[in-house]
Length: 501
Image (cartoon, rainbow, N blue to C red; front, top):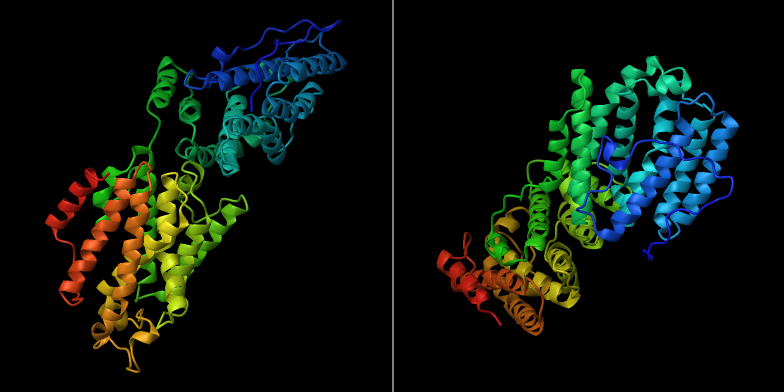
């Protein structure tokens, strides 16, 4: 929370004279674009002024400034900053985190090897990026990408030294022996930093991050080309702020795709991604050719999703999935439930389960997807998610009866068989057992949707209604394999959704 702005700096007696240094406009990266909200931008500029003043006292190339004088100046700057930044605790916390790095510079404690260079540059840059994320309420899972961008900018700053470091300390900040290793590190840092604009929720900060990443990229290109920064580099950064990168929408097939245009724009991409990942995992679970590899992939995914709950981002999670958690704020538990359902098909395929086991399976593999779709729409309704998920999953079971049985999976519950031995040849004879449960699930889902009012309700209704049409066709054709929704039925459902009240 931000409190009203106070006076900028406290006037202190015996205050050392201010030192001229860089301004925000003179930096090689954007400090606080006007895309940012007013209060956040004011906090960033106040933080920048304090940090820049401290950095100037530590690094000023003035032989008359002895180490005690530099430390004394830093102490006065810190006292001013604690007053100036009191209105914004995240800014004050970040300034305090930077002080040890400023003090080390003031004492002339320069790094002597590669590890020390990286550690020193992290200490003097990472708090800045984390401050911006905390100020905007972003997820701590973005710290890794932010840290990479901040470290990249700091290393570039020292690699592009125009002689100021040598004038201040009598040698470049980076020992010459470390330059090859530092230069080799830059591309990996840029790749990690490039994920940042895709993961940020705040529109203004997303533009700021896009511009900063582009600034770092153009600085790398200038460094590799042995040239100075040009106006075109600044224009490229500005263009990135105006048009930040977007994740390409996933290519979808199936019934859900037709309903996506009915979703609010902000939720459309999240729902499409949820559906795409669910389909991908399901295809692995259905892979007859290499069940061991499929199990390993799904287990790796489950471990990685569980690690997110502990604040860790590990492979094999792609940026698109992490965006569901950081940018769209989707909960982790439904993803874990979905993966558990997929893994259960590989560990011990369901064969004539009891009613409770079938209900649990439906809740895991379909109810979880329903919960995620509703979460993307800002709705929390577990009963609706379970009812709709159960209706859709039981419809899938009725559609794939013979194909599943051929793979050793029989989802019709034990009570349906009346003592008969389940197999692919007779499974359709007992399918009618599920009809009362399917119809009850659809009735509950439609009733709950009728009682709800939320953005995207028409799309959710269309998704359920499309599957209901499929279920009715399956019944009409005695659950024949290959049954699908006819195009005219899909058009009717979408038109009905548009006039839904």
